[in-house]
Length: 115
Length: 109
Image: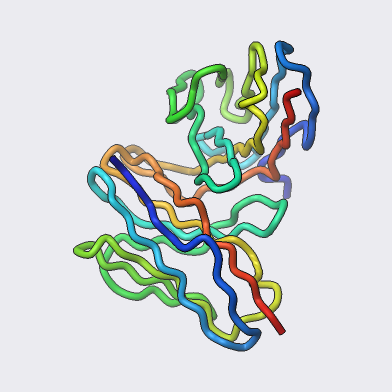
């Protein structure tokens, strides 16, 4: 069973370039999330989507954009990468009903280095 | 502001018991999660508490005191494979997860 698939698993990117991190889930979960994880900090929410066609900003949305054209896919785009966006990015999904989040299922992560 | 505090690192011996504490301050509260994360891997769900008390699940137990803003994860009969980071996360009144930085647990033979 695939669960959540992220691509690429690792990428080195020149500052100023654009990049899209892909995320696909096959669990038919309605809610999806993008987090970044940096050493010494907790997971920080970048953007989220409660259902297909809707997205929302998390704690650290600046410099990132997302779209949710269908239930399965939730790509994260960096329009013009900066070194502070060097991080490990996790996509997650949950089968949340209105008013709550259930257990989160995470992808394996995408390690991005911006030089 | 909202905050989660947990120790940065703990060391324990194989076969022993360890308790990882977590205190939280959130705007409202809708539950407390624990996740396990092995180095270089994704976090995986361990437990969810919303009512006061102890929830036991095999070798792992999680405790919650809402009045004290406190939770702990108890790991019994430690195995080497339990070496990982343990993430505490609280769900606030807007159902947003507030994450701690994680506790790195080192198991020694």
